[in-house]
Length: 194
Image (cartoon, rainbow, N blue to C red; front, top):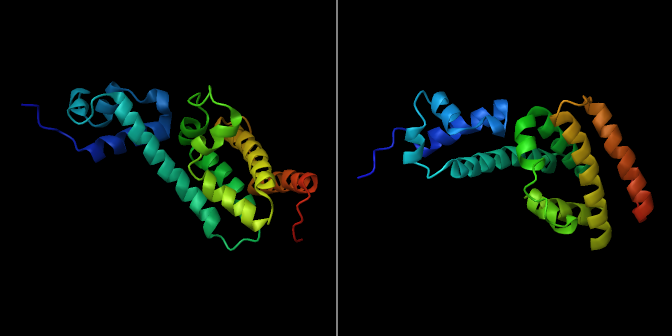
């Protein structure tokens, strides 16, 4: 008969998520997780078969946290909703640098071509892509080009923030996103209101 679980699955996931959120994914080991729970590592494995399962659960929690940021962008009464998506992506990196690194700065998708990676990296891809296409009344190809270029640019700013290489104010971020977006609009022939 297997030993009775000392901790619930939720307790273990919450403790693991807290470790990653504060110290990064590399700090999450069976030993650090056991210590966080005030136990040895052994009780963890009465609920999970290995640390890979724990990490998968932590990533799912991190995606939920990230989705809260993106949902804020969709809920705004803003006249530039796509700009707000980029801004909230960067805010997530500023507020949750270790979660951002885990989700968006890993080599998990390194062997894939760039055209198929973005939908896998960001679970909000279809939602954001549809927003771009519909809001700017543009072709699928132009919407994809606009989205991909602005995502790459936003990812660059967000990565600088997540690694503490640079620090930007809210106004600086918004101005950078506007500057690049205006150039892309001109290049793609997309007309936007003032």
